[in-house]
Every structure is written in C-alpha cells, then in structure tokens.
Length: 375
View (cartoon, rainbow, N blue to C red):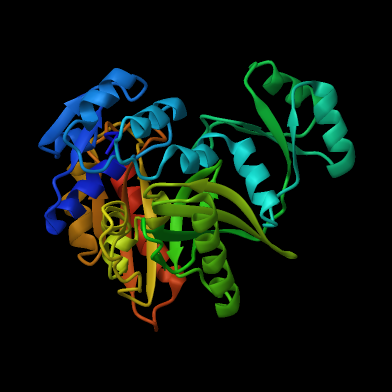
C-alpha cells in the first residue's frame, strides 16, 4: 500500500487476520502506519524510482491516497506491476473535471459546472446559476482543501490569483450529505455497504451515522445501485466511496474516492466485514465479505487535535465513562484541527440516534480537549 497514513494503519490490522503481509511505502517512520507495520519502506510516492523499488516482490499495489502521479501508475502497470485500482480508474479521483465530465456523460446527476480560467468565466457562470459560486481545484484537494465558496466577484478573483487550474460549480442547497461505499473485485463481484449520512463542517467530516437515518429504503437501494454502476463503468478494483448531496429534488453526486474512506470507518465494529478487509479482499481477488450491519444503528465521531495534549492521557477516563465506546487513535501528533482518531458507538434498534451521536461526540470532545463544564 502506497501511503503511510491512518488508512494504511487500519488496513494493516485487517491484513493480519487475513494472513496477508502488507508492505507500506511511507514518507517517514513517524507516519501513522509506519508505527505499526513491520514491512516498512521509506520513500517518496512522487518518485517513480522509489515506487518501482517498493513494488518489487509485491503481488498487488494499492493506495491509501490519490496523490501518486497518474503517469507513474501507468508506468508501473506497463512494467507488469498489478495495480488496483489502475491508472485509468484513478484518473477520475485525481482530476475532478475529468470525473465530472465522465459522470455527466453517463447520465448521472451532478451539480452544474464549468471549467474556468478568468474572472469573466466565473461571472458568466454566476449569471446563469447565481452567487455564491463554488470554485474547486481540479487536482490535489481533499478534506475541505481546494474548495472555495465565493459570494462575490472579488472573492472569486482572490481564488483565481492562486494560479491553479479550477472549475466552477453551482452552490447546492442540500438537506444533508450521504455516502455510498461499495467494493468491486477484478472479476466483477460487487458489494455495497449501507448508505450513511455524513456530517461535514468546512468540508471536513466530523460525524457518520449508519445507516442514514430516515432514508427511504427504495432511495437507499438506488444510491447503492448508482455507486455500483459507477464502480463498474470506471473500472474500479477495490473500494469506491461516492459522496452525494440529498436535495429537495433528488440526489447529486459530489465526490469520488477509490480507497478506504472516512465515511466507512464505522465498519470496523459496525459491519460484518470492515471496509479495510473488503478492500484487501477486492484487490487480491478474494471473494468479497458480507457488508451487512453488525448492529442496527451506529454513530461515529472523529477526534481532532485540540489543546496539543496527547489524547492518550485522557483515554482511561473516556473508557471508564463509556466502556462500550470503541476508540481508535492514529498515532498522529495532535495539532489543532488535525484528524487524529475516531470513536464509534453501536446501538440497538430501540436506541435513539441522537443519544448515540451524543455519546460519540462527548467521547471525541473529551479526547480532544478534556471535560466541558457539563461533563
């Protein structure tokens, strides 16, 4: 797995039980996965030489991020390395304009968009679709980075001054955000996890609710089918996360990711097969596991760096306060706003989702910054 972040760290945990030896290419020994994975290679994912050396002896190469240059992925495939997902599929996560064009070409619902180079282009788009206008970096953006909501030409001009390739998108007034996580194997077997609701703030995921509360079963089935169709059309091998806006008029596809995804971390305890095990099964062409829920309701809250203290200093208190909460820490330095872990709480059918959310958020908040006055 290229990349030594928390996704590789949690994939390593799944690899152990499958008897799969996971090798990780990490930027350094302090990275999240590097702390726990014994088969560690330190290198640069932007270096073709490092990638070639890393891939020697590997049966399959996969990724915990989308930032390996596409031409390097293609070169590895040309040299006979089995890469999953491959360069053609990954292009749709590395180039968001290509992704938009392909999805629209398939007749799938997406926000209205246009490539822009000048302020006149943005003004023209806004004249048709109104302000605010969302400007997005064509490549490199994630977790709220590379996305700007511009309420005026002056704000758009500031973004254009960055000099990076952009496209404009309509500002969608949505009810909530949903995510569909599916897996696809090389011979075309597919499996879909239950559709979830994600709670985002400033483009960063803070909570995940599984399954999405009060989502009509027919709509949930359509969303899962849509995600499986995208995986097949784009030739995805491994996991595909499809992020969507639910609006008053229906659904719009927002983003894609071809790897384990934050919207699926709840599956470690909350599904019969975790997303990390499912990704390994898919890329190694093993039969896919059951994606069914292990509990009727699941709430997840991400842990962010707060006051700079190591969250492990507060771990015992959180464990004692809520023994059923499952805590995952990524071994990352707790800088303010940095995602350093998550908490998952499982509930019965009779439990209120609001109460489960409150438990998960309370634990995550305590790990971040200690007790509030009401705790």
